[in-house]
Amino acid sequence: MGGHPESLRPFADGNTAAVKSGVYSGRVLAPRAAEIRDALLSLPHVEPLDVLAAEEIGSVIATLEAIDRELEERPKQAARRTLLEHKARLGRELRQWLDMFGALPKSRWQFSRELGRPSFMEEVERRVREAQERNGRS
Image 1 (cartoon, one colour):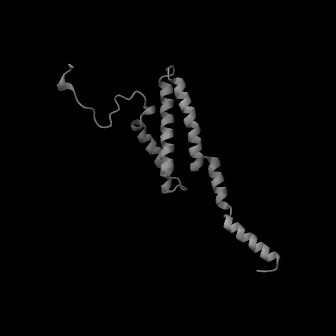
Image 2 (tube, one colour):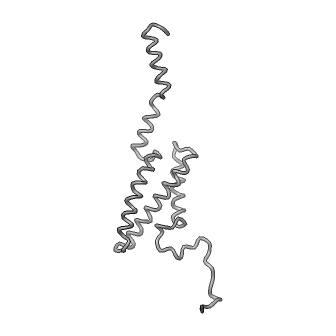
Image 3 (cartoon, rainbow, N blue to C red):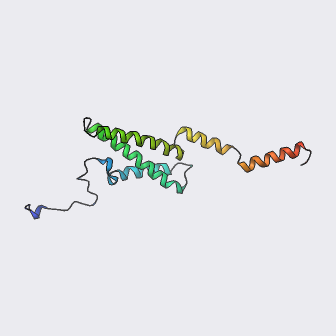
């Protein structure tokens, strides 16, 4: 096999020397995904159970950022079309996740509007009271 055993050293934990693109490496993307997750979990309307959705959103955003870096660094790369298709799919997925999470202006508006509406039971009770008042009963 050859080589010089005295110069061979194992890579340190967390080594990313062989990573050519961070797009497909969860290890490379994990710190950024965690940063995004933590930011989402700090929103006032978020509950601890929302951590799974926040993690998925963080992962998607970190991957999109890695795709953008890859496209900038290698603009004429043969895999460009694949990266653009991947980016388009992840972009649609991200919009859906953000909408469900209440992290888009329109979804936050809809959420707050819903909070202001009476529940089904409250609406039934109101209508029963109105009917009783019209019939002279209280």
